[in-house]
Length: 343
Ligand SMILES: Cc1cc2nc3c(=O)[nH]c(=O)nc-3n(C[C@H](O)[C@H](O)[C@H](O)COP(=O)(O)OP(=O)(O)OC[C@H]3O[C@@H](n4cnc5c(N)ncnc54)[C@H](O)[C@@H]3O)c2cc1C
Ligand code: FES
Image (cartoon, rainbow, N blue to C red; front, top):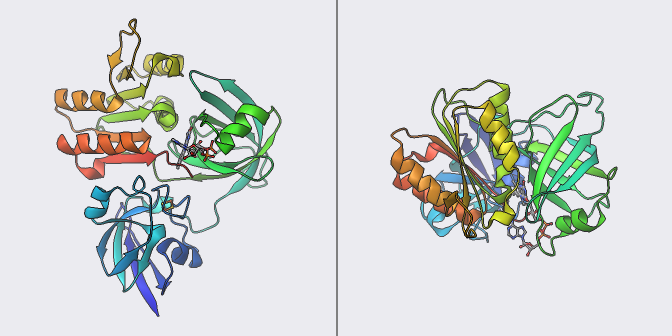
C-alpha cells in the first residue's frame, strides 16, 4: 500500500510524492527524483528535520542530538527516520530552492593549501578541476556545505564552505581535527598538496536569507565560523548594509583562529559588531568571557530589534541558543541553524 505525502517548504511551495509501506520519506522522495536535504540518512545528523502536521507515522531510532526530546515533543521529525502509516502532511525547515530534482553535482578537486590555524583547526583550500559545463567556477550560496571524500575513496564527510562563489574554483574550509577522526587523520597525517579529492555539492539549506534591512546576528562555535565567514564575505561583495553582529566562541585563547580575517571584515562592513567569546580565558584576556550563547542573551536583552539569528557549531550550543532566542521572543522562523554532527 502506498501513502501520499505532502510537504510544504518554508517558502510555502508544495512537494508531493508517494511512499510505500515500510519506506522512509527521504528514500521515497528520492525514488521520485526529489532529493531532500539529508546527509547521513540514518537519524544522526539532523539535516532532514521537519514539522509533522498530520497523518499517522512511526519514527525510527535517531540520535537525541539530531532530534532532542523537546523538538520531538513539538512535533518535529527526521524525514529519513519517518515511516508513514497513512497519508501525511509536513512542513519543512528548508526552502524549495534547496530541494534538488537532479543528482547532486560531483567534481574532482586538487588540494591547494593546508594551513594549521589556532588550536586543532586547519584551513583547507581546494581547487575544483574544470567541468565541461561549469568551466572552473565554484558556484554555491553562502552557508552551504560540500561532502569531501579522501583520495583513497574511503571516508566522506560534510564541511561548510568558508569563502564565496568564484570563477577560479576555489573552495575554502575550516576543519577542527577530531582525535582519532578518520577524515581528521587523513588531513593531519597523510594529506599533501596536489592530492585529488571528490567534492559532492554544494548542498544544504543553511543560507543567507534576504529579509530586507532586518538585522542579522551570527552565532558561531569553533569551526561553525566557516559558513558565517562566507555570509559576511558575501555581505561585503554585495555592499549590504543591514546591521550585523558576529558572536564567535572558543574554549580558550589558544583555540582562536581567523581573528585577522574577522578584523578585515569589520573594516569593510562598518555596521558589523563583533564579540569574540572565550569560555575559559587566561588572566590576560580582555574580551568577552563566556560562551557565544551568553553573548547572544546579552545582545538580545540590549537590542530592541528582533534580528534574524544564524547558528552554527556543536548541537548543544545550538539548542541553548535556540532557547535563548525563544525566551527573547524571536519567532522560530527567524532562527536558522546548522548542526556540526558526526556524519
Ligand atoms: C552540514 C555539516 C557541516 C559540517 N561542517 C564542518 C566544518 O565546516 N568544520 C568542521 O570541523 N566540521 C564540520 N562538520 C563535522 C564533520 O562533517 C565531521 O563530522 C568531523 O570533521 C569529524 O570527522 P572525522 O572523520 O575527523 O571524525 P570521525 O571519524 O567521524 O569521528 C571520530 C570521533 O570524533 C567524534 N566526533 C566527530 N565529529 C565530532 C564533532 N563535530 N564534535 C564532537 N565529536 C565529534 C565521533 O563521535 C568519533 O568519536 C560538519 C558536519 C555537518 C553535518
Ligand atoms: S539525514 Fe536525517 S538525520 Fe541525517
